[in-house]
Image (cartoon, rainbow, N blue to C red; front, side, top):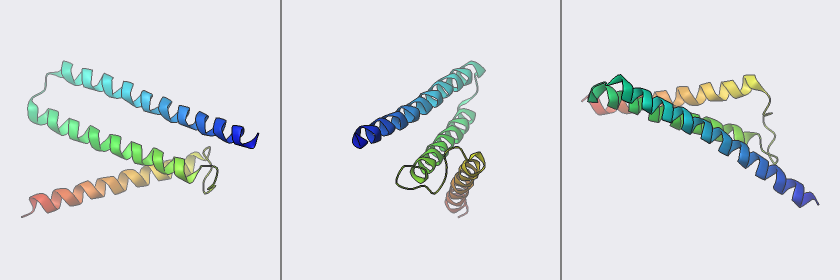
Length: 110
């Protein structure tokens, strides 16, 4: 009986993650459509697309960190703790931004 409860918990967690992914897919689709309507030139489009790609990577890393830090075997954080979840999301975004800045400086400084 315990195994069925664990399986149903894992299944509900997976469904929540899929729901979250679908939300971001719909948001991305709307943004892509709006970019099409703006009729911007290629360099601006490439910049916006690059920023969106890095933002999606940051959101994915944040959600992954929150999931793995709050699963059944590892109660380091509570999923309902909004302040700690916000700190994780902010930290991941800052780290991703610093990596992008470092790559940019290394690529274009010489």
